[in-house]
Image (cartoon, rainbow, N blue to C red):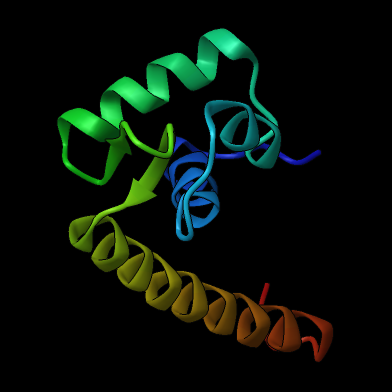
Length: 96
C-alpha cells in the first residue's frame, strides 16, 4: 500500500462514517489498528467532524465532516489533474 497522509486517512474514516459505522467498521475501512482508530476517533470527535450516536452505537458524519470531504475531493481532483498533465508533458519530452 502506498504512503497515506493523515488527511487521506481522515477522509477514509469520514467516508466510512457517512451512513453510520461502528468503531470496527471504521477501523477496517481505513486499514487501521485498534489503537490508531481510537486516536483518530478522538481527534475527529473533538473537531466535530464525526459524532457518536448512543442509540445505534455508531459514528456518523457531521455537516462539518461532510464539508471536509467535499473540499478534500475537490483538492484531490485538482492535484490529480495537475499530475496527469505533468506526466503527459514528461512522456512527450517537454519537461526535464
